[in-house]
Image (cartoon, rainbow, N blue to C red; front, top):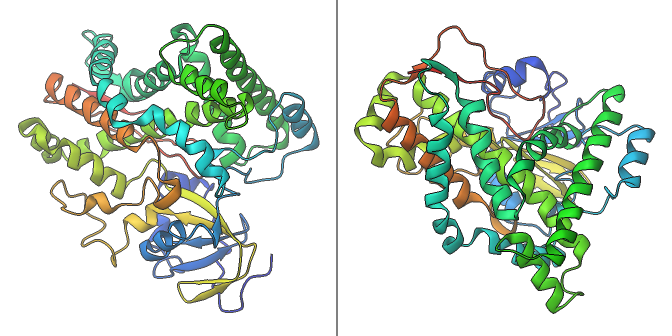
Length: 413
């Protein structure tokens, strides 16, 4: 697309490049990105928004900034992949996070039942018991991968239990979710798109079968709750929409928390004094999770599209422009946070981060995700006061723009 004449252009910026995936904060500190609140990135066809104030303004004005592109594939899909998706029921209809008002509110209200404070609080014993069970499997091992042991299975077990998914199917759904990240937020090669599309079709089919099962055999779970709303008024919430809500929650409800747990533990362990402080004073754990969300968020990017001409960072942007909201950059914005490049367990305003968005689309599962991370860190600190990072490890990250956490985090006890 044609950019505004006053908008800086950075031809080198590529959020899927190996250098960016390894350390996006190093990229953030290099001109022309550093000190530039808005620039255009030809590699992805998006305006990149880096300042806290501008991103917050976007979230607060859904009329001017539509969520329609939030889950759109970053690259065009080949015809065969599109055919497989459409044939399998993966229609190009928007899901809850990519809907604008009033349709967004109509789906969000029933989905919010899953994350009421009452329901989240009631999950504490389950989260604690699951965390203990997963860590019990470490046994006498002196070194283990925290992601595979805890950060990966814990949030999946919780959200799939909420949905009413049989435990035997947890691992399969978790595996499928990785393909979804590649489809919407990565840059899969043409030859890989067909495999991804086939997997996503199986994922969609499973969710719809779950809805049909719960329609006949309801239980104490979110799926049954949503179906009850449908039964009261089929026009208010269709079964296809129930399936769409579950499709969104089954991914967002755990992929982000896997990253949050991994990022938080990594940042606490990279400075032994931080871990020692957590062990000595567990009351610091909630603050540590909030600071991790500011300093190294598990959702570093979200997207919007302008519905009319706007101005951000002093740059005029036309209608129909796609925006790359760099939440990770907002958390390091010196205009919003003092000493933004320091991880500070005692930072009083860390909770002002934008890691969960703002406004209408504020993350439904924010409280649950933070609770899971807090309880996971608490149990790790209780069991392993001497926990530390295994030396000489290089962290790798899934190649997508919107979900970030170490794929492997090797720790020693």
